[in-house]
Length: 309
Image (cartoon, rainbow, N blue to C red):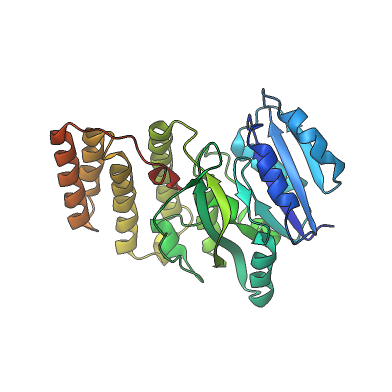
């Protein structure tokens, strides 16, 4: 039985998939299996995967348009390792990623999830400059995680027992499925991280504005359900709950401010419904108004596209 199962759900990412698989093959930790679930790709994904199947650690399954949530759950069911790692088919790992994360698990048996930092790459795999991300929290992180999902999906490794306790990805959601999962996990388990950029996260190759709007709508639904069904409100102070809703609105306002200032202003106005960070919301509203008045429009940046809700 492999020590680590790596789950990859792929659909029409044949152009990116070799880089992702090769980054797994390059791991200094070698006791792993890679479970690839091809969710009804219509490109040449099967042909791209075929040469990699010469390595017995790589297992390939073809599904029939399950959707990303069910495809990932199928990968989980087919996996066998004590630990489960995730990698999206358009991302890539540094060679020491698993080694360094498993060292944290060995040192801290109470930790359920270990993640790491990420760097950004574009559609052509070129590095994208970005401001350093804030230092993430560790330990019991539910209140902070409720405000901002700081665990990038392709960076995460979890103990298998975590899924036995809280379940898998919820098929109700098509987006932000990791946010919902991590909230459930954080109620019961500690989180930790490796303070290095060990994942290359690809961004900028989708419909940014539409995806962000959909993700924010989903994030609100997930937060609302977490409050009412998961009992998050019992563990997260009311002020932090308000901060979560307001900061989610401000995040979308910030992302859209240069390209769609009117839409951004509406999100800043929505953020004003909650008292948390009202000064920041007003500043964002003013900045949106100034951008609109200037008549200048700029596309949303790759860095902004990395919002991981």
